[in-house]
Image (cartoon, rainbow over all chains, first blue to last red; front, side):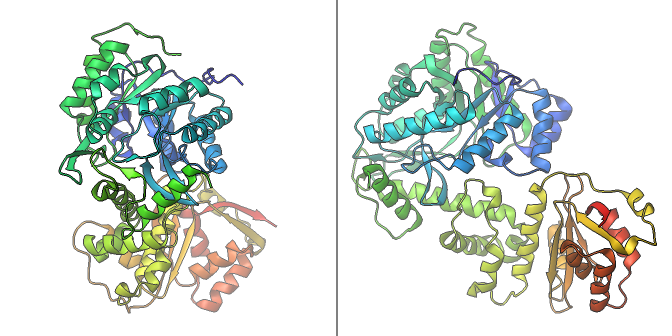
Length: 293
Length: 256
């Protein structure tokens, strides 16, 4: 099966800023047709039979390219993927023909219980084998390449055998999947585990990055009074994350970039401003320095 | 058992049980078993699921007040965590939970209010279908009307209660102070419809619910009307059919 082939009928996602679609902004978006490159939705919110969610998204899709971001597939679980859920994801993709489909390097379901959080995995060869199996299964069922997102983590595992970057590189080389680089997650994880975010970003395999996420985080303290950042998508992108993003774009060229704001959702104009800020950085460079597959 | 499976079993158990210690093998760069860091996951799981329930049961939340609702919902989440990542399906057991949850025993109607809100959620996500319009009413031939069958729109939900559940719900769904409601004022039945994308809750006349329940079971209009008369002799067949059609509840009327 050719996984690289995009779906016929899907509109490609432009290398501009996109915004996470929230139903409360539907009226403003449809009336004003803001100059936003694309929208992204969480797949799980569109797994119902009908009604308002599908009505809104169909109207949005008529005017904008769409990216589908899954939050519940539990790719990092040792247990088998939920086949019913995978079929539901395929149904969403068949219906809305998204330009990009992505999921997380995390797990959320165990023993039939859905924990509704993106839980961390140990970076071991055992996890690697399991995650790759799951990604291949997803790509086979969807008939397309997916992007995998780097996580925000608050703890690490004694049983990890490699770095997050080594782990991500190995996944890409084994499965042919692409990467969704969440720059806020890089800052959050680097702060939480006391490593250098710029070194992590400079070593990131940009040639496989199909999308970037930018979101907000909250500041807290860990058990020993050390800084602990929480990825909560409940505020504006932090200045330090904008700085990392600027550095990233300068290195890899323009990549579709999502403003992710899922909780305490602000007025539409605020999201539009965040998107404009990303576009200003994206437009500083026009050449993709490394070719995305 | 694989090592990964063992790690995830221990991790999931400790996330759900706040009194469990941090699992073996979990660390920060400064210490093993960092309780505060692990607590971020516990907090994310419970806070997010309680917030899902708060959005799904806004009237129950208003009636209980924010803090009491959150404490109640947290106990529900502990006892009934979701079994699917599709969270629009989460919360169907909340009404029954409220009916046996001791701290709200003095609000016996709360379960039915939650039932109405759950029905609202089902209607919101139900399949789309064009309901029949007033022309269907005009087309009914009086001589064969009694033998017709009605098929309901996929969003239609029926709520029957010994409490004034529709009034409690509507008074607490609007902005501003709700009117005083006498919870002992007698029962109410509600019909939930969604002919387009907007969900509507209607207070059914006496006998209306028995009529709809019989139609749902495949009874003819005539048989269903008899069931309704048994509940209330003032049941008005014509007004009820017209009301159902006008509310967008009927997907099809057909002979046989």
